[in-house]
Length: 112
Length: 112
Image (cartoon, rainbow over all chains, first blue to last red; front, top):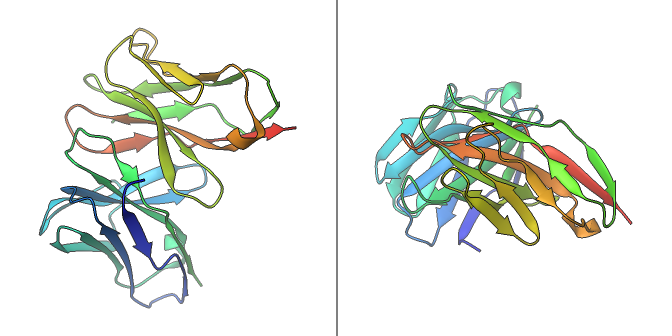
């Protein structure tokens, strides 16, 4: 299994509070991704990174920001959480943009 | 834009039954195609993939053939087991980008 961890694994928060999710990899892969999983939608890309300090938006980026200051860490921040951001969040990594993506175990976020 | 359509579930089968999960896609260019599996409480794992027309991906008794003429990548297994119960996602990766586009997922339940 690819060395990908996500923290926290579960979080409950209140509307309007900031939340940061962390993805950590030990594989030295250049590309990292954040997805959200919702019933009926599969997984949808939020943001991705193609190197340290290099990030770009995905399909559902509104309300989210990301940062990557080190190869191994990719942070996803909800500046002011809303109930519509209740979801399961998955991090993924890949060696290049054409290689297979490997997924972390997920973070279950509930915004009350 | 690119999209993936999967048959709706849940699919409920008896052990040793034949499995087919349909997947069709719309994409510009010639995408790579994937099947990912998600077991309860876990992240996604790559099950198999195909990168060009007529390629057959296979793993753990599962197979799927990349059919360009019908834009399909149906997943099949000759004899399912209870341990195959999971959610199966079809996905594509455009040759011109590094983003995975997922179908909505199909829940498979196998009864003993």
